[in-house]
Length: 134
Image (cartoon, rainbow, N blue to C red; front, side):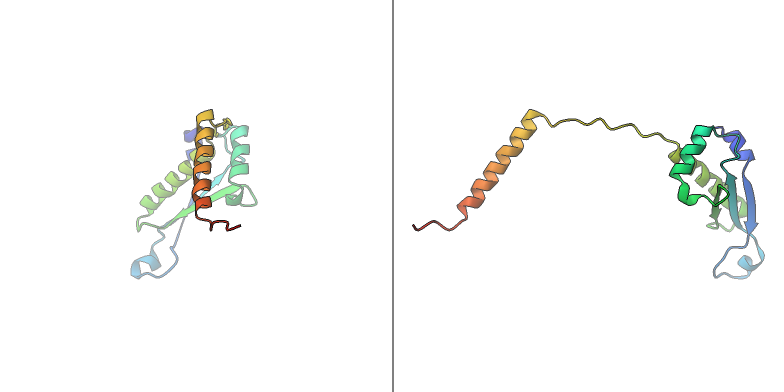
């Protein structure tokens, strides 16, 4: 993943934040929307694109564009930094390849301890039963 190429390929749009507010929210476009076209990116290899498409399928639009937005701050610049950070975190987490789990067997001592515990518990419960009067 080449972050310099990816940073150049980002598209930003400033819009008015939704919801209740005062004079400030009605005249300032502080919400930032970030668009990143994964399929046409020069900063990602084809394997990385395929991995992102499979892992982040629910985040893509029909055109293969990721859209993120931030309106947590009153500052447009701060929101822009926040949304860039969100994108790079999302890409970093999605491109990590998980190690394959190697199946192991429990040790003989662990199995033996479990069976002994089962016998003790079984004996304890059998002692609670009413005696046979036959």
